Image 1 (spheres, one colour):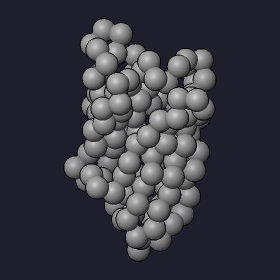
Image 2: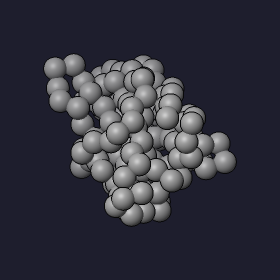
Image 3: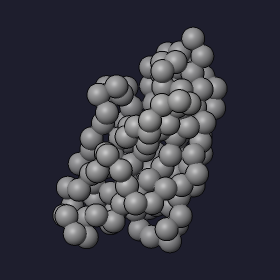
Image 4: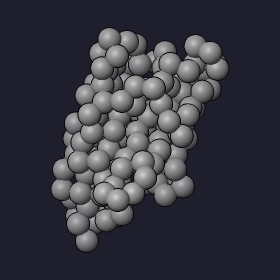
Length: 126
């Protein structure tokens, strides 16, 4: 299982970014997928997840601003981030979890996942 995130960068508050995560070694649609982030000095935070059936969940702090999506043909997951705020500044990690095999297609563990890729830095200036 390999995950490679990209698309981070520097953006002004109110702007948008789209993160991408290419998966290899497994089929994304059979896994729960997600995005986590960690800011300096802060705990890791689950941002968004999508179950294998397509059910989504979001942290309260990003609801209405971020959208997770999956392109099964490309085996890639995306995180569209709009109306960005300085407090969104963090390293963002793409994740996957094979929990659906045990817990069903609605499994969407925003508290933690098994497989992690390298992060991509997102910086939002005020």
